[in-house]
Image (cartoon, rainbow, N blue to C red; front, side):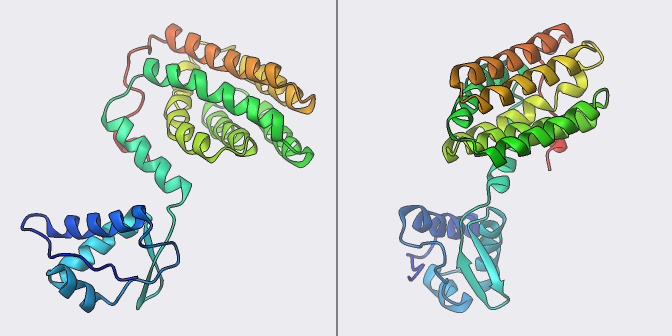
Length: 246
């Protein structure tokens, strides 16, 4: 492993340093666990100052592509799912995506996640979903707590489905969409009970290994959300302020 490169061109040099190392990681020239050379060696290799190199490395750390297991050692790593989700969610928020756009995609991803979960879910995993469902029932009427539990429920459904691509793709979309519940609840007070009903039926379908029924109820759940968004007049409203994501 070298992380060697031709000298970077004038401009935002630290971004070019970060971009070159990122390209090596994506190509597989640098693999998770590989140690990067010392800062002095890399600075000479890239033809930049050590302060510029450090700024590039900080960007890579922020992106989750490298980390420091000790102060003098830096290694390549795999970004955590929550880091990827936050970046994607911020990008969508900054693009001012609407409830309509999010719903159109979620209408596909959540039913698919439920179908896969019905295929793969273990008894312990279904029990964990049932525990979350009990907490959802207890939170009826509390929008903030309901949103939190709903996010956990849908994330767990996706994890149970054993498809990492789907998990990464759906998470930022679902988080932006489901946090709109707080805006919908005042206009659709029965939405709490309909959400509880949908979750209950998804779990029951999983216990029966009924993929079609799990998919159907997940779709009904998102259709209900869309109806709530329409009642609240949110269809083409921006889903979330960019600063609200953390």
